[in-house]
Amino acid sequence: MEHILVVIPVQDRHKTYLESKAPNAHFIYSSPEEVSDEQLAQANILIGNVPTKRLHAPSNLRWMQLNSAGSDVYCQPNVLDSKTILTNATGAYGLAISEYMLGVSLSLQNKLFLYRDNQREHLWRDEGNVSSIEGSTTLVVGLGDIGGSYARKMKALGSYTIGIRRTATDKPDYLDELYALSDLDELLPRADFVALSLPNSSETYHLMDERRLLLMKSSAILINVGRGTAIDTDALLHVLNKGHLAGCAVDVTDPEPLPPTHPLWDAPRMIITPHISGFYHLPETFERIVRIAGENLEAFLAGKPLRNVVDFSTGYRKR
Image (cartoon, rainbow, N blue to C red; front, side):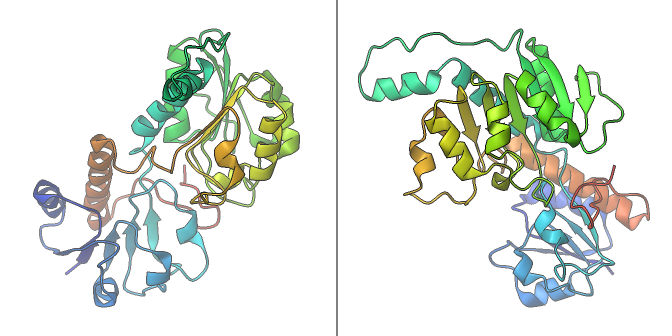
């Protein structure tokens, strides 16, 4: 009998759905904070994220379904046994996070964040010219579910869309051009919006250093929803204080959480949110996670291919 440990905050209807996919299995429901070592040791299947320090490469674990799209920390040595299958929740977060990205794009280009600040100070002041999405160029770096969803929305609003993925093959219809990461330097000067949706890896660490930030138009907008380490924080602070970039929005920072005394809080033309664009704030996100878990559970027990299998060597989902 399979022992299935579920640590996502399911309701009774979610339990009924999951249990219908594995009617002969034994289900245990807990939370990442309350799950016991004994429960983890018994589990053959784990649905949901638990801190990596709690795993210790348990030998009984045959498959782990993450509730996050990011999976890099679970690919580190001695976290999971090499025989354990790891799948992530790619496909659950695109709706919520792409709408967040669109929201901060509109706020920055229309200077709504400045008018909000003025409102607090009771200032009736014109902040000057704004820009438009229609007729702009959008560069999306990282074309998973999140980056692809944002590109679709920007194209629908009249932006010329350029995408970057690890292999520049199979250009989707919502992109006008597709390139590999090696072409980034040539593309940055063309973009009015640069959106990063990347996992943490040696390839993406400080991808946007000062040199690349200065390659961007001074009127461009930078958005980061992947990992904070993709941007050199000190370099970003420097270029913003110099007056470069029309604005920047980050839902992820380096360090994270951002300390209260960190100077990035006070950087000009900056929107900072505390890694909230995904999570479960949009209820549909959680519903999608449960559906992915249920479909994969049914496939796993039937010996069929799983959705969103992660390649341990890269931390990326296998295509």
